[in-house]
Image (cartoon, rainbow, N blue to C red; front, side):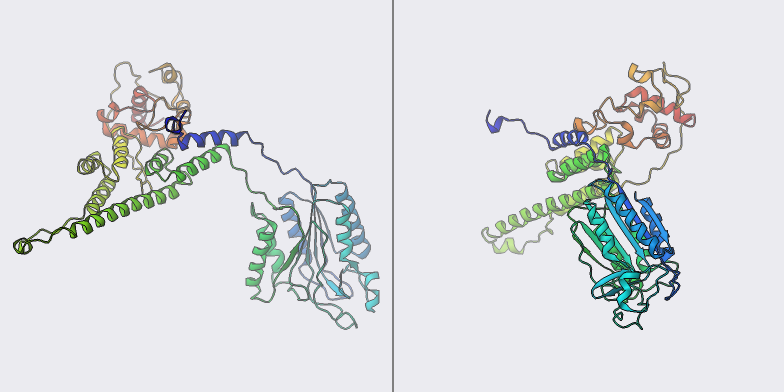
Length: 518
């Protein structure tokens, strides 16, 4: 078969195929283990006590539990308690599997000596810098336990860069903590830059931990971006006095809260919109808005339609300018012709634009017909015909550019049941009229089914077949009642027009609205 004779595949059909394939793809659940050890030390006996570390540890433990971590919390830990907790944490992590995530958080005093960092238990007593490794807990001990698990992701967070409690001891005069060389697969975060001092905070929590707890639940944010957001907030909160710092040797992407997986309906809508967007066809954009007036892409669709209409007008203006330029090259007029009085020239592009704008603002069949009479092959003729069919079929009308106005319910008018129609209709009882597909179901059941006919003549099957009416029109009992009341206001003219679910259903809606939509 030659290329010329092959049938053209409509982009909306392609979108439907992609939707079906996407629905068959399995969604990977977050099944890996998440283990955390959280430590908060503040009630130091022999050095300056700290007000916030216990509060910070409690806040962090609660925050981590909410994002799926199995948390071990210890506070005011003595040296033997801290060492035992770190050892037990390493043992649990080694038994959790390769996909496990380990997290260690420490708030309290921490110091550096000869380039090594030490976490201080609350019972520390130090007279000589040489004894620090005997009474403190090396930060490297934590990293060694985590690295021994050979798991995929480890996170170490140290809010321990507060004031140095040993400034009077020789060889312990360095501020803050030293930079740690973390093993592969580790993300390391300090509350401030290496060598700098962090503030304990004026409130119940340190600025760093408070910001971290605030940003932790954000879905779909990579850990690197999340700590950048924390850094920005802490710099602002402390007036530039404290700048959190982090380094990463992670080899996989990590998010505390994975992005929410889209539903099959959301995937379908996104792919349909992407197909329409790529078409650059104003008619397809308008049909998309007709079927989905309130979806999350509606504003983008209206913006695209505005752009496409503007480009169409610009192309028309360029053509008009070219025609004017060509006419200027024609033979010059005779003196008599030159002095004759001429009417002001009319810009045909501007006239067409004004007329379609008037039709759009009026929203009536006469206004769109007036445009088509004047410009049967105009730039917006196809759009005008679609609008006209929508109005004639009494389908819900969506302005192609503006947002849909809030519906206003008209005053009910008397409705007399036609021959064969019931005297009353209830929302939750079978109608008992019309085709078998209608008569055996209630209004509540029918609106969750599929249309029998296209809501608009010429609408592609993919836009309405096998779709739920409720998704097309946002039908629920309240919204449907508002629509049904329009049949009371319009009387016979409205009832005589076609309906996606048939004329009998429309008449039943009118009776139901007359009796108060019960």
